[in-house]
Image (tube, rainbow, N blue to C red; front, side):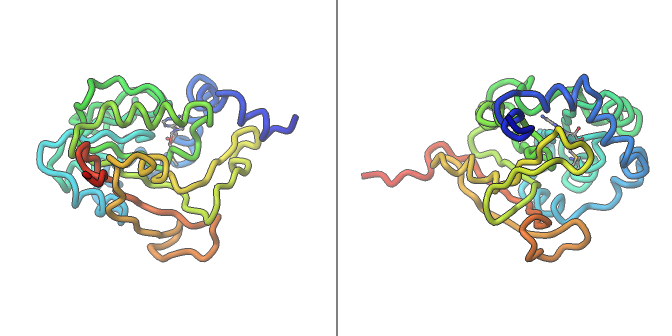
Length: 230
Ligand SMILES: C[S@@+](CC[C@H](N)C(=O)[O-])C[C@H]1O[C@@H](n2cnc3c(N)ncnc32)[C@H](O)[C@@H]1O
């Protein structure tokens, strides 16, 4: 069996990022950005998009937050409350020092330790491509459970033309699963895609290369919406 077939069958990446230290290694490779409080002063284009849908005092969760730089910038711009989870204990420890106003916890996307319907906005901060396929339906179910009716999902991730699986650039035994993740939500009529913007790693332009194309998407949850009443 190939490495890809193996990883498609087993939930291994969760452990590699958590106890295996790959989350810490991501933080260490990008320490200059994630350890500097000033990184939060600049709102990325994706974060600016999400901020349009967040109101003052809303409770916003970022899944895959690393030290919370991105979340802190959103909270600063929108006046909201921020909770972040990430498998990297090192990133979370640094984030608690930098941003004591954020509630940062070690955790992964498949288990959200929040009450039903308690969140106003859940952002998947460029982490869904790393989630084990065995966990991906649970991740959608957990996000739905914790989000209030009328709340929002934000997704920053790759946006290829077709679903693709390829080795993660920093460790071959990890697979990067690239696909339009909004489809996993909008398969359900109570989730509607309201905005989608493409960009790439170097600027805010659309990339013709489907492997380099990224997107920021906003999805609205409305339990009574989406059905034609007859
Ligand atoms: C590409 S970084 C993005 C960091 C930050 N959200 C940002 O936009 O700058 C991906 C993050 O996802 C985390 N991660 C990996 N697997 C995860 C999982 N199963 N659940 C939640 N986060 C995960 C990694 O530790 C890493 O911090």
